[in-house]
Length: 339
Picture (tube, rainbow, N blue to C red):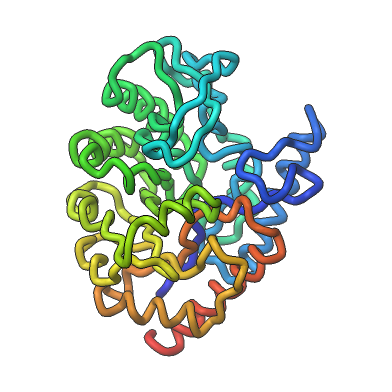
């Protein structure tokens, strides 16, 4: 009960890349960089397991960015043709590459890191991929001319990799869709359909991560504008409850999301955010268990997977580790009380 996991990303060690950044520059090149990425992956798997995380991830140690780490292996994208794009409904600006032709994978995207993680993880392994709607929101398009067509093309490519990840022995493939909290009408019009195409035929568990974003200033400012209650989930949870995705990741601790909205996810496993990634204050086991207890009034306890609110990539490494330990300890406390 209360199988713990994390949203996906973890801070990169200072010997691998710049710290405290979402788009860090690598410190090494070539074979030395590949070796260092592998070393960081193995290190974080060990530290997650030591902290009591039941379903670990590779920490996205081999990816510079959670979206662009996938795009680098997709044909039809020109990385030299970069334009400034307003992302998440102009919440922040970024220089992004451009789709210039039909999209198809150049080959496997994450085979090396998934197989390395599988070889070293003693328990369950989750692997994350960007979701089609979030990719569409993070790239320029000079070819398809239609967001739905573009999303479905990316969904085809994602599906190819997701199926292969399941064959590599991954226990859950999770699609990261922070854009689901921004374009709620599009989620219902075509976002769920694109997600279904990405997950079609995947033989392991599937999940979708939707949240209010990393703890960066643009996201914090946006959260401050949302008022006393954050009700974005209310619009999309019913559609997700009817979807074929197995689990949904929800930002809970220190958020203004009414916890009763979790009832709208009936029938789904809930990766419950019990660790705040927008604060350096480390949660206590009591706080973690308290969020779990509150969620139990609205979600069957067998369906709760304590998790982080979002990725931890830009955090201080030591603080991230302490928060993982709080997550593991809080889940153990909850098992003792409610198991």
